[in-house]
Every structure is written in C-alpha cells, then in structure tokens.
Image 1 (cartoon, one colour):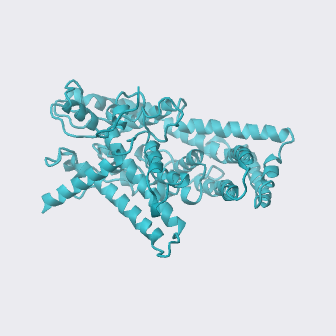
Image 2 (tube, helix red, strand yellow):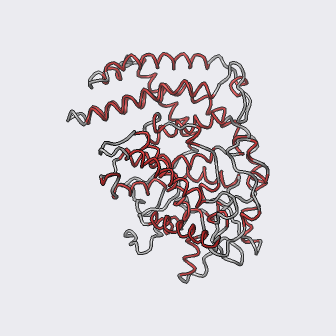
Length: 492
C-alpha cells in the first residue's frame, strides 16, 4: 500500500512537471526576458513561463488577460524573495524591515502594491527549502531555525537526505512517507488551494464571476506551484543526467561515483551567489542598492521640479481624466507628510536610526520603526494604485487617451518614488549595514563545502551555487529552459 501511494505521488509529480515543461520556458531568476531582447528564447527566467499562459485558455474558455498573468507571476515572484527571510538575515534585521524592502521592490516590478499585490507577512512567508526543491542538508547549521521565526523549518532528519530507491531521487524531493516536508507535497498543497479558490470564484452558477479576491488568490497559489516546478530543471542535476543518457559521458553530475537525481544545498555562500548572480544578469548592483538609487534620484528630480515651479504638474494631469480630479487633494496631503518625514530624518542620529536587530526587536525611541513605516507608506502606494486602476477603467470607455495615460504614469511614478524616499531609504541604510557586518567570516566558514563533489567520492549533496542554472552565464541555462521532449529550439 505504501509503495502504491509513493508510486502515485511520483506519477502526480511527473505529470505536473511535464505540464509545466510543455511550455517553452522552465525557470530560474526572478523576472522575465523582454520579447525584443536578443536572448529571448535562449535564456530563461521564472517570468517567462507565465508569459506562455497567454497562449492557453483561461477560466470560462476566455483568454488570459495581462493582469491575470501578472497575478500568477506575483505568487511565483514572492517565492524567490521569501529567501530574504532566513536565519542569516533574521539574526541581524527586523523581519518587518525586510518585508518593506521586498514590498517596494514588488511595486517597481508589478506597478501595483496594494490589494492582491500587497506583500503581506503571510504571502511573503519565509525561506522553506521544499518550495525551491533545495537540499536541506546542514540547514541553519543543524540548529532549530524556528527560534528566529516559527515558520522556518525544524532541524533536518538524516533520512531526508537519503536516496529513495524507487525514484532515484532524494527523499526530500518526492518521498512523502517519512513525515518530512517535500516539494511534491508543497506543489500539491499549492495546486489544491488554487483549485479551491478557483471553484469559489466560478461557483456563482449564473455565469457571473465570484469575488475578485478568490480569483486573485487562486492565481497567486498557481504561481507559487509553478515556481517549485520550474526549479526542478533549474536547481537539480536533471539536465546533466539527461546529457549523460544521450552519450555525453564527460558531463559532471555534481555527485560522487553514484548518479542520483539531486538538488543543491542552500547555505550562506549560495545566498550571496544567488543575489549577486541575479544582479549581474540585470547589469546592476544588488537590488536593494539599486532601489536606493532609484528612490534617491526620483526624490531629487521631484524636488528640482518643485524649485522650478512645476509642483502642480501631476495635479493638472489628474484633472484631465474623469473621476481623478478629486485625487489632487490626496496628492497634496501625502506630499506634506513625506516632507515632514524628511525633516524628521534630519534630527535622528545614526545610533537612533539603527535600533536593535532581530525578528522580535523593538526599535529605539526616536529611531526608524519598520512596522510604523509600513503603515506610513501604505497610503502612498494605495494612492498610486487607485489612480492607475481608475485610469485602466476609464481608458476602455474613452478612446485616444493613451498618450495622456503614459504621461500620467511616468509623472505619477516619479511622484510616488519621491514620496517613498524619506520613509524607505533610512531602513535601506540600516539593513545594508547590518547585513554587511560579519559576512566575510560566514563565507570563509562555508566555502569548503562547495568542492565536496570533487573531493568526497560518496558525496550526493552538491551546493546550489555550483549546481543551479539560474543565471545566463551558466552554459546549461539554455538546455534547462528548453528541456521539453520534442520541442524545437529557437534558431541560433
């Protein structure tokens, strides 16, 4: 009976994997590749698989809208950035601080930050190895990570790391008979939840759509399931094993003398590799530093416009579209609050601004309180979303507004980033300082594990940074993204 159950679970995982790989993308870094880019169809990111949804039928036989594709990818994107909430960061930085940074990064990525696109504590979650098919070996240095956040996983049981003889995969991937967390279990949970909320949305019976919130939750859960499935080819040695089956016997499988299907461990070195590698793909610094630069430049440009007597540009544009003129007063109020925060920052010392670290830390009196900051920036993000949603509804009714909408969107983005700067830039400085302290010691202590597949003949636990195919510089990024049987590669 147990063997039958495990075989059924493996079959389910295989079917889900095949359905995901049947689209022309498989995985990897956050975001997607623009259709006009030369590397489109050759390199892959997580967002590319969501783009293929546009070719499929959606609920009730309709087409996928751009907004619904974005809602799916939001669930996928959140799983990438949940890695920021792990032991290494929570030791030093308040979890609310991290959430705010991810929240603003999400706003820059999706254009919306409230409603279904709000980065809540529940939606962001924490780093869980099974959500990325990561090998949990030596997770948290074998200490109980739940001390930092109860949502983190417990210490690793040795049986999780054993090879399942029925599948040739590590037990943590698909063997659900041991009571530990598995990636197949996470995929089933996510898809079950997606189906549940999808049924709630369509259960009206009259053909009228149900609550929009149910649809959004169904799409978000679909996105997080896709993330895990996409990571199968991105974070395992599946491609290497296939190449060896095809006769390329010089391909290294990242294991010792036996060749099971494995994924990489995700330690401190691998976290830095993932973050820095992602940044290299985008030709930028780390994303947090880039965010700081964007906020600073927007704030300076907005102040320059004000000094030139252009303070009312946004209000003037808003009044040209029906139903938006009344929002100019909200813009004035939010700007006054942002200016007051900027003045307050000038009177806070560096010692006050840092405050104590840790997930349960209480900020010092007069310092930067991340929970209060979240409450302060919500009206700013809500204002921006209110304007853009109103515009999207209006543009369908009044033709010829595209040029005006583009102008409003650009001006609004500059205005919003300028308002956010006094609230967010101080916590960026605080988080960067805390994370940089002691990082070199962490790297030195864990670097030796990177080479165990070469030095230990029985090793079946390679590291993520050497095994993963997330980044464009990895030669196997392309074949991993094209790992669909019978699919014709794009012309070279």
